[in-house]
Length: 465
RNA sequence: GGCCUGAUGGCGGAGUGGUGACGCAGCGGACUGCAAAUCCGUGUACCCGAGUUCGAUUCUCGGUCAGGCCUCCA
Image (cartoon, rainbow, N blue to C red):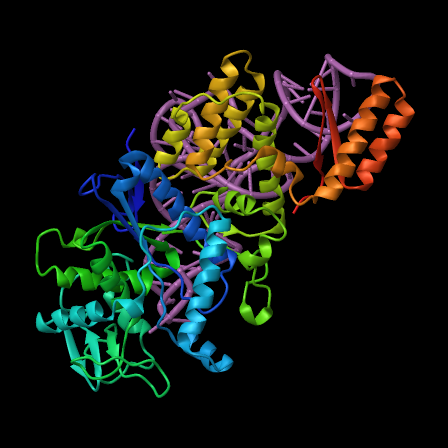
């Protein structure tokens, strides 16, 4: 069953065929590291991590190259550094480390490559030089601008007609631009900003050219998949594509000269209230992981289709915890079963390969959990293997089931709980129901729920963090 | 104003031209001393109007509503 992906440029689902199955390339626009990551930042990370995992499972781990850049040249970083009175790289190093730690909590694998703008500067400058040389960029008043008219069909990716762009750009069009849509490749630095020498004068690069240069240097053009949030479609990805098309000169398949598939995830919204830093209601990943396991955050981010908008609510997170309870519960009851060596379930895989249909894939996971619960004899090992292989392909169920239900309990409390559970079992064996029920009340007061079974009692925390 | 999405049962959320995914919540039953967990069962859901069709939630057109982008936000 082949993988198919919705390609924004084609506006349709297309079978995914890499240019070279031995070297599959994907690039996703990463963070600007000037603050902690919020849950909206995490959505593309988790979505493309899932795609990364699926590609690795399909083509082999060594065959997939995934680059996610880090933007470390930015006004917001400069401002932050000025506010704190520290060097710029103090800010970028701090928040990059925090970012990587947060994404690891969400079960996201580290990308194969994390190119950084500041470490790609030679390539950026060289790239601008090539665009100037072939006539698709021009210098004006200390800036270098990209000529959006140079290669035609500007706007084809995002679907913005050129006339609208002109009409929409009615304000503040710099007089030195040939066309209102033209954008900056290189600009002079203001006092206090980082500055690099270049043939165009001292200055710093524009945002769009950074990504193009990082892609070319880290992966080479064209890449198979270019990903990112739908909010980046215009102008960022439109501009990247234009740069790539002009770079490629005037070859035939210019549409695919830069990226062969464009994949965009939907936006994450925050219920009624718009999340805004000024309102202080930003849901930061580092704070959320204190209230729920990172795995539940990951589940919540994948519970809807990646292209649909997602409303972030507390209820979504609570339901995600319960969904994982179901899966981990099945594993816990099968703790004594050795999982058979099997691949993922075919129906599960088919769901993911259908443009990452995660809701359908999750439905299959629940079916596999029920299969495990109801299987008998050797069928249990098979069922457990299927469930684990499937869920783990999505980045779930790597944890210990006991820890899932008892996580956050310190040793002293655990000992006390175990003691109470034992005493209750003894009371039950003696048919002293009153004593047994009283102990159960004591456990409930400790936020513990006890569950009896034919093989003995187990317990779990009712409210968990 | 331009471009683009989407409207599915109490909630979340897939999917399909004709036997109502899946999870949570609810209800009934089994199991259990009682619970919990688990298992089995249980819901006349597809925004409105018109059209196409033997038949539309699914296709077409119109409408209403909601949301996004057009401003270096993932």
